[in-house]
Amino acid sequence: MIRDFAKFLREFNIITMAIAFVMGTASTALVNSLVKDIVMPLLAPLLSGDEWRAATWHFGPINLPYGSFIAELINFVILAFVVFVVATKLFKMDSIPKK
Image (tube, rainbow, N blue to C red; front, side):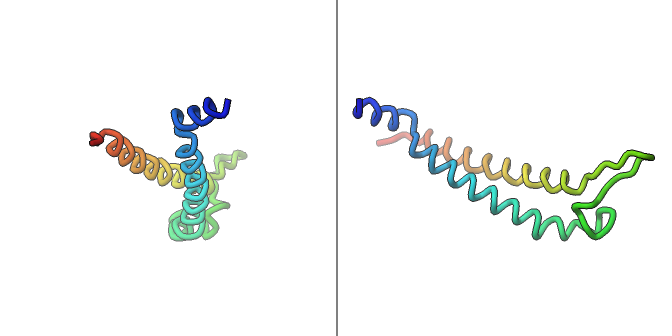
């Protein structure tokens, strides 16, 4: 049973997936801080008002807050780009013939 478990760990690269999960969690926190503390304050003058979290569009009785949506969209784009770069590097490493 222990041999089967060890084989499972090797075949499905569980250790690599665990490392990727931990790194993904850490990079998510880093990107969140980057967007909320640096990028969005720089964009705040372009939004309605100085507080980007409170930026809203008013359509009669309807208020659509868009400031936090823009921040989350920027988070997504940055994280998607980082995942893209890492994945392309890993795929290139896997395609290198081993001697």
